[in-house]
Length: 164
Length: 360
Image (cartoon, rainbow over all chains, first blue to last red; front, side, top):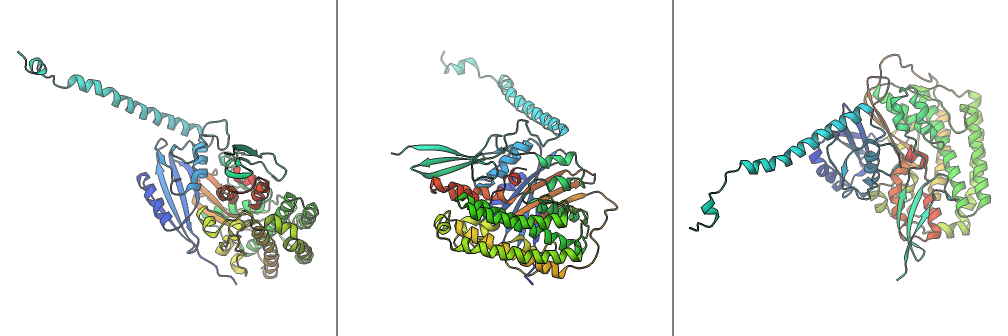
């Protein structure tokens, strides 16, 4: 009878800001990237990065939960072949992955509809979040002239170099 | 300086069974770079989880692809059984294993025929497909279908093998093995095949690992990984070892797949001899799938991943399939760099591409 290998599977919840570090750890452990899966659970993206240590039969899942507008860093600088997985989730789910090497810009599967795997309610939620983010950005830009108006003015003689 | 050209390969090409497009950057008949473009047969099957309940999705899963059909249905059921904590009866596990190995037999014979056709050896192509017809006859006799079997259900299978069918299978296996032995003489010793495939498209073991290659493509480069070693279904009770080769070229891929045909025949014989009596399935009497699970199986082309996420309703939140050809595209593009334009066809075919699976 051939040896039956029990596979040890570990799933780690990883904050978005630690994703690249955790992926680098997997690369340094010589793990193979098995797949990247995107799902929308409770109006949030749930990204599952699966790595396999084929010699030790260990699987590590890195689970990242983030909002529908969070910017996801690409891992293609660490695992170049992740480009296909990232392009797929960007096109099907509208996941905003930044700096993908070999970015197909939404033409990987050549689908006419935008974000076809997002439900109508999820698309509405995403648009709402994007609007809110835009408003927050606009507000931030608009504050600057007001701040300049509120700032204390210098005396006129001093401004002219103290000339009398 | 010689000019570079971009030559399109596919989506329509005589060697391609399914559409894939490669933009080949060529200089002096040498490929500098290959940029893949897919999406010609994307059907969005994974998105159907919104409309088809988890029981009916089995039929969608097994229609992802015709060649790997049984594996898709089986692995989908495995993932759901994991989520719902369903223990499949032993007889069902053995039956699934038998049909899975027949599926592998038919897939490898199909590929050997296409490979022979790719380098113009038509008589060998016909002979491989003639043998494959016997395998399809067996599948039709035992499941009712030649390509799409529809015997898997969550909890087991809904077809059985009678004692007469078991004897029939053993007889057919002897005939198939004898036919393959005849073909092997040509495959392994014909000078033209060796000339066209030896030393072609070499992928070293390190490159195969670094690029995420799976299945016979990786095993031909010396990576001895086979998901059947994890012992799912009845594989834990059968005796086998991964078939590997060391050279990592197209010839090694032919050798690995041919030897896997014999391995499949042996596995089926072992499973038939150990086939236990018992139920074919367990009824799912209560509960909806709630939670997530991932099944990893060895499809004919390599490791395939099936992820399901249920939220306690009859519609799954997510069903995701990562097929072996999807993983093998990156090493294929690497392998094409530096290759002659005339060899692109056989190189693409050497990974045994299944684009239906890749695009879903």
